[in-house]
Length: 208
Image (tube, rainbow, N blue to C red; front, side):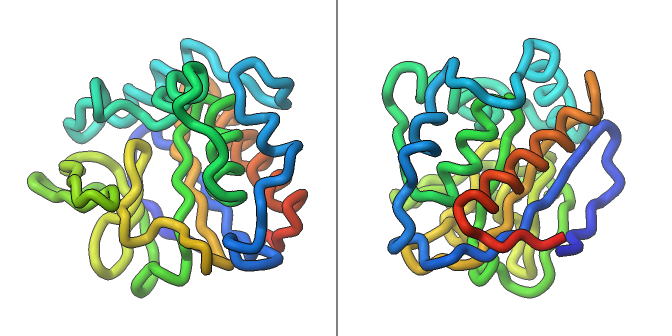
């Protein structure tokens, strides 16, 4: 799936489009995937302090501040999984969370059929925001590189929009790996490749 990307210094972004073998509501998270959702589980890729710093730096390019509640989702995962606040959600989201947890790279997973028009990756202007949870809370995404559809920004390296999140009916997903060219652009590519392999192991058909 071709997703155009605005020119953006230092960003190493990859997209993975997959069609699941059944709606998510009928696709339980398998034990092998749930077992990987823990800090220290054996994995083919590992994060580092250099990766963490590089992710924050690349999100700062257009003025966004990736700190506090606005820190990269990959950092949130380490804390939430480590203290038991986060367990399995659904097979597609868990695939993204597992890979993100171990790679240290934020990953968005959205329902492709909830996207309006053609997706692209761009930077929202000042004052841009969207609702990110069922409670109606919003996030200011001005200056934060995002996945867009025809209705505006809908996912990023911090929090994804509620309107495009997966549901029990989801069959087609689009995952975005929000990587950095530093310290090694190959790390983002390897992260995306492992995510493809996880989707395939789930029985999904992966494009490209």
